[in-house]
Length: 111
Image (tube, rainbow, N blue to C red; front, side, top):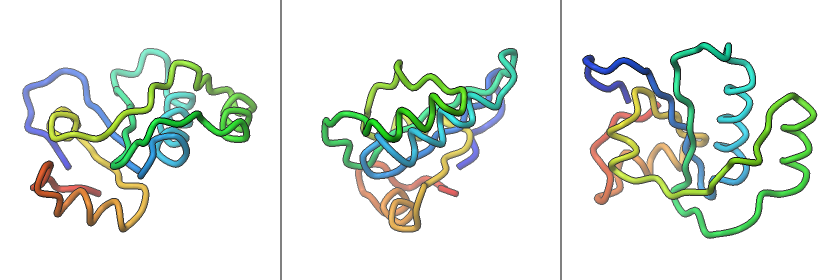
């Protein structure tokens, strides 16, 4: 999903189911690779996001690779989050279908 021009800070939103594994890992992996002066905002959300703790193996994996996932707050994707994002990346084809067809958040173009 690409947002209209007129804003100053590009943003990427990764979306999976629970927002404690795939999308969160993608978010923090990309944040760790971006220069600290990068204007790109990176975030993540889940389509279900039932409250649960981040798996210890996921946390250890990210820390081992230089990412600090401690500030992560699990959240559910919403139409507002999608509208505020320049690029939305679904972490699986079923999440892509959900985002494209869900009456509460569609229509949005999702990668």
